[in-house]
Image (cartoon, rainbow, N blue to C red; front, side, top):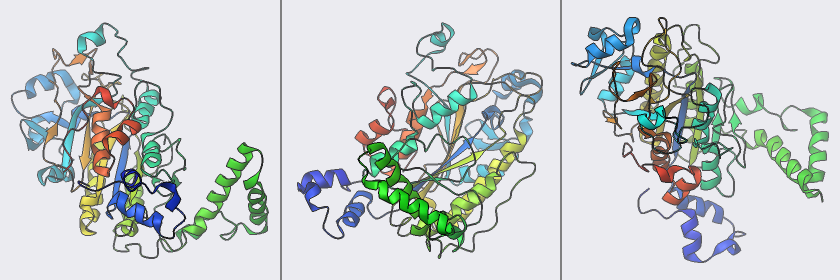
Length: 449
């Protein structure tokens, strides 16, 4: 994206403004200027419930003994850890992620979490006003991650703001939701997220999901369509806006007929896991892979940017240590990256994890309780992988990195998220709009090429 003029700069510097918009092909020309003709996608994987990252990444050097004492009965055996260097190892069922890390396609972002502003352990212990609202509460902390703002001032998701910022004229194909619940990430923008709730993508997919009068609603659908069409010029502005939005949504399935004609049929079926809660992670990533297969050259309906939302349930483990979830995550991410590599899309797609929060350092004699800071994983060919970014905490009972058994974040979620969105194509000023509290933190963690 270096040295490429974006759409806003193009309009200003040519002094053409809106007077040229009626010219045929100008919108397409502006789109090419804005995005440089290169398709890119972000895949956000929510580890819903709060991932116990201390049993994903653990010390395998002299610091192991203190870790084992702190974790007690749920400590991982030192000999089982898969070495990733610099005194750290991954859990033994994370082979796929370890290999991605070794091949520099996976990076770890350490001790990241929700912050209103930088805060010390001492300030946290003193009950500083710097602490985010309702720490340790699932819904609040998960929403703050999705809003990209821990101040409580935002009511739209950062992916929705990214869509509105990068596509001021609107892009109904920007945000794609393949999960089932808890998607505030893509909420509150000009366009609602497109929702695919099945791992079935084929040339007939849009007819299968169709709602418009040309795709299965028959005479009743046509009546509704005509009523909304009449209200598009209503003197009541609320009715006018509603009618235009409904017409757009009713037309959308018909607009997308044929979009999957060239779906990659070589994509292998993803493992749906064992006893998964909710829609299996593999099933969701299979949908994403198929949609990406028709987007990689000319974008999705000509649009060059997309953000996908994926949700893996089951991480709120008060009575276990996430062993099953960890293994299934690693397996699914490995399969997904394999398909991206096979399709030649590795450099175009970046996958990143988020979670409600981390877990407590010590065990409750069965599992762990709600925490704060956590580790995140970012994957793809554009990632400067094979490294840990940020500061890893000391995992011991007398650690000065913890407050009340919870890790105090040393990296703000905005720093992590903004680094990926900058790679995506956002300028510094656009990042300020997408992440309104970014000015308090590091803007670029440098883990993206």
